[in-house]
Image 1 (cartoon, one colour):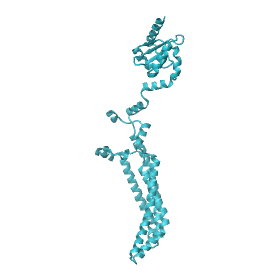
Image 2 (cartoon, rainbow, N blue to C red):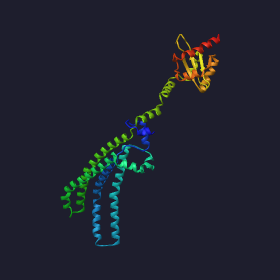
Image 3 (tube, helix red, strand yellow):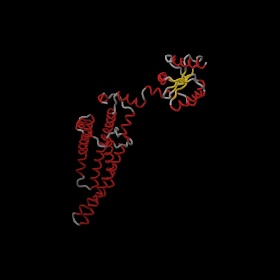
Image 4 (spheres, rainbow, N blue to C red):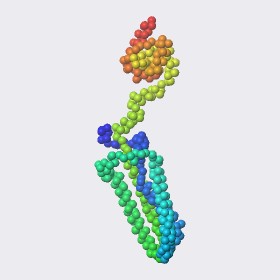
Length: 350
């Protein structure tokens, strides 16, 4: 394991590793993109509500002005209630819309991810060495640049919009609340166009970086990739064995050919191999089947009924068992031992 951790990770992550990472809640997402979409949705909601609430704001300011003439408890209480209502009406919908849009933006990036791993306390998260490493990482640098870019965008936008609105703001100082709200609405729309569009561009750029960083963090070493492939597919022997079993005829069909068998070689553990010897068809004995367990008992009983010669040769069967391919001739190097058993059984039968 220590060799794996020190080996350089140069291979692309496998589909299994990405699935396992997703189960642990590790996915590529851009919080910056979600925050930008959330902020833009909140600004749009505020701008939409300004028109509908301008009259109520004007009435509120008028009530506040008149309340100074009569400092009565009921009047002040009504003014406070109206003010709280307007604050709630102007703040809760934008906040709700912003939160909903932020969640939708995250869901569109990652889909549905259900995992408790991110909230489970882990010692490495409070390890000072890990914290120092994260402090100087590429991800931290990108986050710092993103924050600096946002601050620069907001600062430039506020200065430019402020300079543009300065004459209008001065003119509406002594105007009614409606005129002031128009100036505020125009300023918010300009701020939305400037910051919203640029923030979205920065968010998409951050999403691209997060996906690149995620795939880079999930990379595997060659040893890990080989081990995973072996675990999923097995080694070469197991793979060849599965292929051979898949290509073999059903056991019921093989039993039909037992009457043509020439020799059964058995092992002490119950395994057996059945051969067909037809010199006119093949100069080498042909494998009919191999069997173990209950199937071997069935084959043995059928061979006894057919009076097929049977011999016990543990060494020979051990050498041949993993080479058996149904309806294929055996290797020439091992044929003499099988032929010797066949000849001995034929001589005994005479």
